[in-house]
Amino acid sequence: MIRLQRVTKRFAGGTEALHNVSLRVDAGALAFVTGPSGAGKSTLLRLIARLERPTRGRILVNGQDLETLPRRDVPGFRRGIGLVFQDHRLLLDRPVHANVALPLEILGFRRTEARKRVRASLDKVGLLQKENASPQTLSAGEQQRVGIARAIVHRPALLLADEPTGNLDPALSREIMELFLDFNRVGMTALIASHDLELIAALGRPMLHLENGRLEARQQPPAGKPA
Ligand code: ADP
Image 1 (spheres, protein in one colour):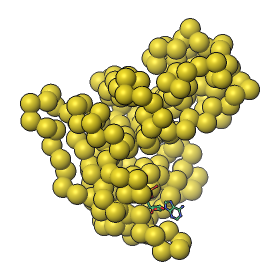
Image 2 (spheres, helix red, strand yellow; image 1 turned 90 degrees about the vertical axis):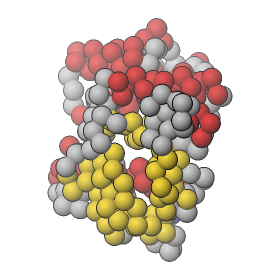
Image 3 (cartoon, protein in one colour; image 1 turned 120 degrees about the horizontal axis):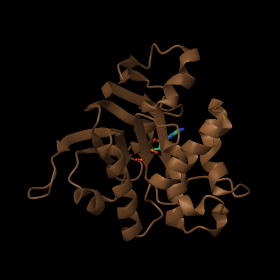
Image 4 (cartoon, protein in one colour; image 1 turned 135 degrees about the horizontal axis):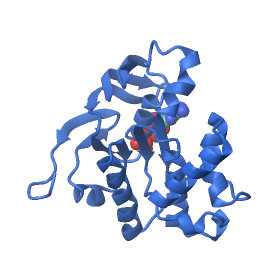
């Protein structure tokens, strides 16, 4: 699903956010990207979503080489991806359902189909009963779940999440990770950046560890934990 071959990303100004990174995430897998702040996790996800371009190296997503992806095909490519951020950036003047419907509006979905999908998406994150609420009245964990509902409403094959539990307490963080595991069980591939090693080690999924833009040897799930 995702392949990086010797990818380096140097920003204008000289910062090398990623250095010679090669990795592979198979279709149907759920993997974590770990590493301290500044290690290059966001940059990695942004390259995979083609929000940034590599300085060197090759990136393939779903068999598509991003280097040769024609500009006109970028929107179609992005439609296959769901993005979750730490800061979910909900529109506070619109109810929950309208926030979740945004990607479908942009994609030109008919209203009846959009409404159906929005409800299905909110149901998946356990927030159907809050569809008419204002985001301001929701807890931090609920707001993050609205952001996740919005990220999956167009049913992407690949979910990229950047520190999705960054602002949440341990119990809520665990709930959010469980949601991603649920999505993965029904076939969504996921790559999740997190510095919360304690939480993700307990989940027993592959971890890709970045330090200073370099990928360290792939860590296996700790012995005795379910894979
Ligand atoms: P992480 O997500 O692990 O915290 P980032 O990918 O955000 O790391 O950042 C990696 C490095 O690249 C940092 O040194 C950061 O300051 C730098 N960086 C990230 N984005 C940019 C940018 N747009 N311009 C210049 N430097 C950047």
